Length: 331
Image (tube, rainbow, N blue to C red):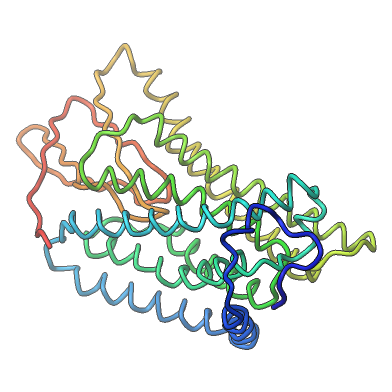
């Protein structure tokens, strides 16, 4: 991996590492990922088997609360995402704002710091699989979007990093910035700190915007290659990226409509007939669910209702009910 030659961004003048072994380590990691990206497929299969096994193990057991662990987990990922944003945004500014969209999409980064954080980002996709552990141990509902997003993001990230694609700066920077806000929100929620519901909708909206930019720049790169223009990304990789981000966009958009727009319409329709109590709950990166389940008490009978776990913040509406918290195991 080469250092910056010719033009050097002033943004990185002071924070560029001054030891050559840094480049050697990145070259080694890049080569390993290029040759072994398929391990991400094996990890994904193992991930699904482990999750299923834990679900079976927890079937006849009480759910764990895990409030303290969940708060620490969210805080840890918040710090990581903020650090990544801090180091990736200057490189993104230098390429996109100073040199234009074509350069930012079609010319791979040669900055050691940006490459280093892209590598950490690729590794973090394995670490983030731990999000699902909180869901199954707390016996929350695990939906398709959660594990599908984790699996596809892991495989695509490893495959892309191995090719040192030019779109890496876009994918990593967007994800780091959005995750900084998202995990911070979930960290506060895990600590039972009240956050306005508008913040929850904003986080979900940013995730959807991320998907829009993702399939746009992927499409831009693909058509640049198709037109015969120079672009440092294989056409098949650009196509893969377009499919991944388009799929995520439609899945998240559908979820947003169901969780927000449809419920707003329903609540408005029944406003003059029922008095509804809306309880906003949080889920982490299609991840952790709220800190407790909802219990509906009606006619002396108690039924347990667990809200859907997604990568968004969902609303659960109960009509003429009383909400209580059931004690769970604290770890």
